Image (tube, rainbow, N blue to C red):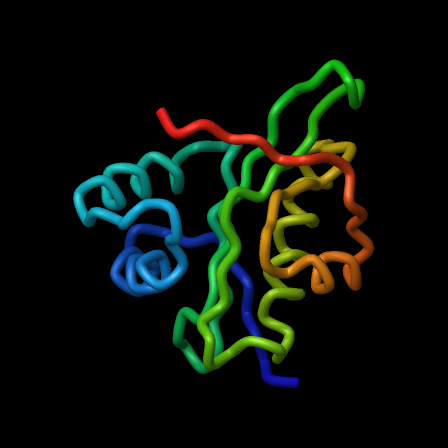
Length: 141
């Protein structure tokens, strides 16, 4: 397995992060100005975790997630919005490391659970102990 460093991202990472975001997006085409505005907010937001995975000094994956209070869980829950690993680095532990980084952050914030919606990687999340819980609905506004 390759050596992977997971850490919170900062403004110095935006160029490499935008490259990954462009390869991840499926419903919307990333726009540079909107990305930059959002990235500045996200790195400063305490209820957001914008983590990156590095291999040999290169950003090879990222994870964006949040936590918030709920009634149903008697407290905080954490939700992963985006997780992406560059195609060349998949199946090498990067996604697992990003998930572990997010879960560690979520635990430190007192979250009761971690959740996400996916269409592509169900077996990956099942291998990490995640279980199918609900159907995801959306409406483009």
